[in-house]
Length: 404
Ligand SMILES: *Cc1c(COP(=O)(O)O)cnc(C)c1O
Image (cartoon, rainbow, N blue to C red):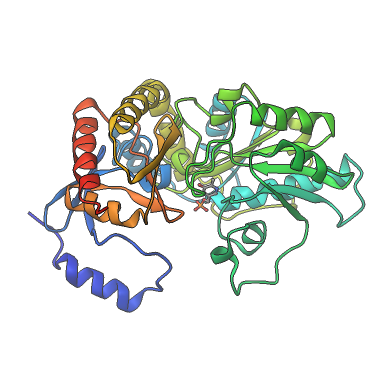
């Protein structure tokens, strides 16, 4: 059955020996995946409720995206932007129309798009708002996650992301997530932008108070401050809306996307904004060797087609409601909270969620703890009723193993 020459145990030992230990992964060695299902090297099947942190919203190995990748790989994969390629223009048009913006700037990983957005809002702060050189401030939020570069972890409030990695770049001010008054107090003449996740995924699936984002958006408008939304995890249907900001009917000045834009095949990220903003970049200001390459453009175009044609946004809404209903029907003294939107769900326990994660794994479900006591449940958006039933049964079973 297995094409791997080695057992899970051997492969884990090999990885531990030769790789830096920057993650604490579950002991599951995946060999193959399709849709919502994963198979390990011993041929055991698991339901994927992580979706590579929402990078595989379309499901693993989607045949249309795979075909686009293979077709493009046979023609041209990388040109650099020292010249043009025939796939980028159509992709940019598709992406900007899809997201409702004038222009896009393609990058590769999510954090690169965040870095790009930071440069963009600072440039605007100096060239348009007239902030004195090197004085611009970006307001970020407690418990945020925007990626792992040195600049971006400098904007983090999570000690383990920062420990012994300083010194950090100045120019970030953190305020409590969900607190309108604190935000208003933090805004000053040097504030160029806020950078916000409409739902904090890594932070433990934190949904802000009803109406909060709309207030934040209004405050930004009032004070001539750009609203930059990091929708890398929440975007492309995950929360039951195309973008999580749609729930509050707000349109960010700067939209940051990644993860599912690559359909689980290839890293593709982007920053979207109006012409007045992205037009501030001139040749030489920014760049990326791989950003905008034809392979990524072909894959991302197909990834967007799948989101539309397979109605993944409404499927997320339906499946999310169904799972939420099942979770809420469970009564356990160990469950403190069930929250989230669409298929970005979190269950908070009275103990480390790693335990429930391990118990689920034994029952063929992969879901992981985030922020210690929260279990994040975020399967690919293509999950069907049978898989939902399978999940809910395994979950009830796993919860019953928790000792009091
Ligand atoms: C995953 C994530 C990032 C970083 O993306 P990478 O591709 O890992 O660099 C940034 N912001 C949010 C909200 C994310 O979930």
